[in-house]
Image 1 (cartoon, helix red, strand yellow):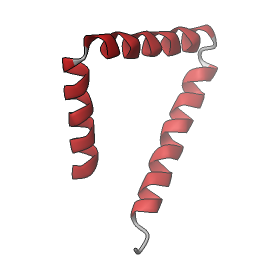
Image 2 (tube, rainbow, N blue to C red):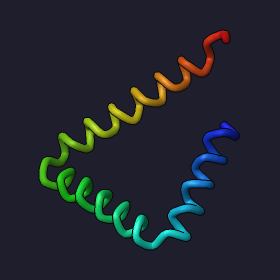
Image 3 (tube, one colour):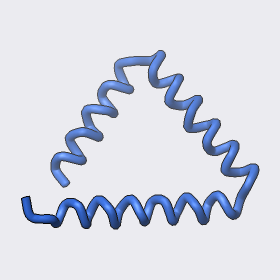
Image 4 (cartoon, helix red, strand yellow):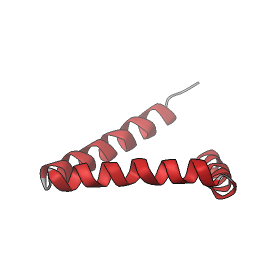
Length: 66
């Protein structure tokens, strides 16, 4: 959990100091939101399923013995 928070924090700091990259990220997020609104509510359902599947996979792979 600490590793995920530190990586997210470093990503947030990098986006804060790089305005060109921040604009590109905002453009991509805006495009995704626009396409989700076009096909809603099915895209929201698919998005929630994708998030849940990602969480299950990450928790499962994190609990394996090394």
